Length: 79
Image (cartoon, rainbow, N blue to C red; front, side, top):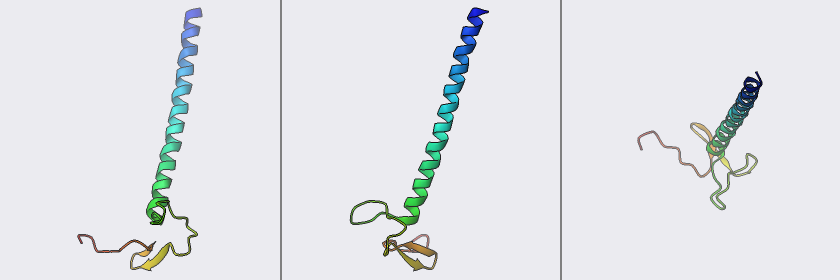
């Protein structure tokens, strides 16, 4: 009984550590996905290599597919 209790305690601690790892991984994936979306939507500032802010006055222009970073060229697929 004492050994079983010790084993159960260790297994419970391992389960808790696994759950915390899963939660951290989920948060990291969500953060990564959000950063990718931000980067794709706003582009990179050519002058400093930083990701543009949504408030940058000259960051976007209208195109036939909607608002795009000013530095992007919109071309048909295959060109």
